[in-house]
Length: 121
Image (tube, rainbow, N blue to C red; front, side, top):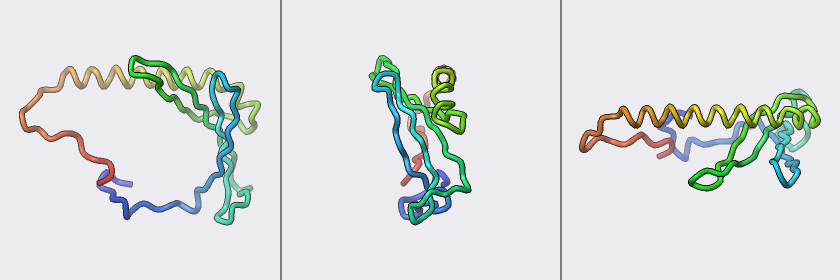
């Protein structure tokens, strides 16, 4: 969707449907198992199951959600990859925050300048 999308342009991609199952240890995080399905809800065997790692870290502004795709074709492989992939996602988040701080510090404030555009109008 473009930055100029409107709510009436939103539609579900029926060729990319997933059923979500969550697996958690109630301490460190959650692994979302994204199971491909067809429009009738049956398992789409032509596509692979995806794994998404989810956790949160505390920041000065409160809990910050961290999410990343986990490699692997089984839950055991996703669990093994969870720590390294979450740490990578945190490192990327820190680098992005530093980049945004540098950009904000170098920005010249001009009275009447428009703010950033809207994603959905």
